[in-house]
Length: 418
Image (cartoon, rainbow, N blue to C red):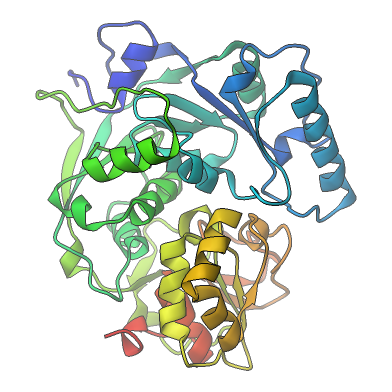
């Protein structure tokens, strides 16, 4: 395949090359390096003697916050010392600015269009919603990038998804992702690009769900083409200059696929896999659940909490179900309090936790026990992901999760949202 693709353009620019093609290995400059609490765990951390540019580094405590174990508390201490030693200004400790790293990228405009952003969490591709090259890398690579502000990528082919139409009220971007994952399966070694007229009807939060969940397709990068909505979002949060990236007129794609948002219905992914495992929610209707969870970097946004609150408003969670809500950041939490969403959720019987990765990764604040069944609006439903290996994890949208929490079994949200 020849030609340059949207994902390749900033790679060529950052690598000082006129053109790159699929299969090329390219060394690029890195603009933003995010370190999170897992990086500072004793079994992973190696002492860093020098960082190239402290202003390029963001330190976030998110996976186990507040500290869930002695090990995580120790990691937080190591991270705080790292911040102090190198004068890191962009530090998100437990407290006012707490949040999941990928949500903080959105809250603070850390992922500038046309830039390169690295973190060692696999859902770093979330930042591609802002037209930046964002990718998860391993611990050695993230430490090297912090020290040298460079890394390398292998350029892959790109699949473009043309979004058309508009979602109905009970259908969300999570359902759009489940449609893509169910129909097309994994995208290993490939990049995913979203665009088309339908994106205009999607909020930044909805778009971010798609780029975040692209990690579950095994995509290398996931990006949205620029538009005024995204550019204004970034400029309102970060005054730094940037140069957005557009596809070449003659860009070649491995495939161009259309997603009709208006034709979608609520879907669920069945336990243990996301790809090639989606079905209409009606197929799973009536499946009894023990826990319902809404949160994570994919679905802990203000839009998600307000949607769940609209389903639960004036209703009660089943006495047989635990509904756990985890906002993706303190900024989201505060906004949801002001909008009244938190009050509606709590009045319905939900438990709201501090912003953290928490139950999504089975760390704390909602771990599943033996033989329990959960429906979750998070990123993964792998066996053992949220707790015991015998637990069954279904994945759906926040609307589907909220409706299921009321009914005590997996339920179509259209019964509550017309």
